[in-house]
Amino acid sequence: MPDVVLIVAVGTALLLLLGMFITFMTLTYQKKRLLHQQEVTELVDSYQKEMLKAQLEMQEQTFLSISQEIHDNVGQVLSLARLNISTLENTITQAGASKLATSKELIDQAIQDLRDLSKRLNSKYVTQQPLSALLKFQLELIGKTGVIDTSFDLIGQELPVAPDKKLILFRIAQEAINNILRHAQADAIAVRVSFRADGMTLNISDNGRGFDQADPAPALLHMAGGTGITNMHSRAAMIGAKFSIESTPGAGTLVHLELPIRFI
Amino acid sequence: MWELYVHFSLLALNLAVWLVLYKKLDSPFRLLGWTLLLTALFEAYAAYLLLNKTRNLHLYHLLTPLQYVLYSLVFYKVLEGTIYRRAVILTIPAYLLVSGIITFFFQGLSEYNSYALSLKNVLLTLWVLLYYREIFTSLKVVELTKDAMFWTSTGLLFYSLGSFFVDGLMHYMLGKSFEMANAFFYISIFLGYLLHGTFLIAFLLEWKKTPYALERAKL
Image 1 (cartoon, helix red, strand yellow):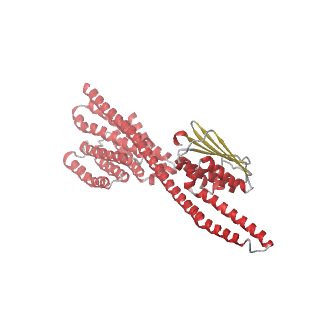
Image 2: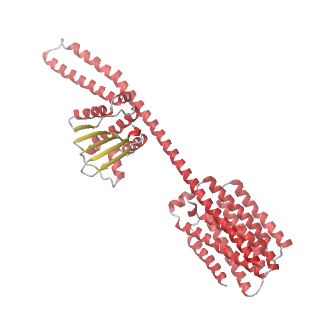
Image 3: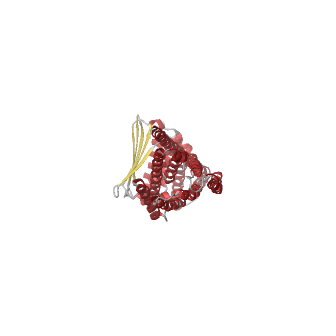
């Protein structure tokens, strides 16, 4: 009888040991799998960031080329045309002089508009200006059309933002403002930049038709051709900012971006 | 007698779930069900012979190799490494040959086929460990406790190692002490419950598998 007890006891102990081994193996596996999953996620994130960075660099390069082309080529041609027109002032009749003056004004306007466009596209210029100045400049250009009212508020003491981050912030603001102009049917845009000790916030709001956030797919398509909002999100994430959109049908839209001080 | 009822009830439950799910199951689990069906038929006949006080040990000389073939095919389907798969498939004819030799020359039809059983248990333990190695290397399984093959393998590991211990001594015990042989018999009964319990969990997990999970499993 004691032999039976001994054998059963040894057998049970061995089974228990096996059970412990399986439990340990399961726990170790789950831990290893979690780590692996984290590594994969980090790799995907880093790949996406690199892709976005490359896209942005390409975009900025294209903008810079267009900006230089406008400034050096089209601007020069228009300036020459204006100069030629100026030389005609003493050779034409009274009636022609009025038309000549109007043409000069139109060419001046075109030169000015092209300079503004060139500045907006030129990333070097953008990175050299304070963010508030860039946003004010952008809103003034829109305000000049007379189609939409614009307002700008700067709250707090403006902190120097790193040039690459400033460029991204400005491009996000441009995207948001473009969305308002294209889709919101708004007659007012308000931009507010707040600088605090713990970071900065950028709010861009309109009084347009808004959209239903519970139905994100049409909202995305409606607002930005399907990629604009995604781009804004990705760009914000790239610089460590929190990005959100609040909207109600008929009550406008608010684009909110928050950048903690450590990322400025 | 109660232990036989529980044993056959568990087998029947496994077979019922297997039949209901048959079309949805992947090929390893279809094969697993066929193994259970074969086991149920042989053991039912063995139980009938036992109740009629007739020796039934000869049945296990046929059932054991057949079980090994089917279990090995399950692992052949599950394992991904070419070398592992080749090893599994090559052992099938080798095992059939060796178990035939054991039956003809060492443990006749009227004897308990402990050598063939022990060899089967060693090989199945090896396949289970190879399966563990593969899942640990690939990390493809999202959650081990929700993976049907993990339960199947774990059940087989417990059963094979436990049975190796039991079968290895059973032959000796039968000729030595009925009391001790009886104790061993209950251990093997418990191991059988454990095996069929884990198989049942595996089938139920396959039942709960969502179409999304099925798609992932095929990838």
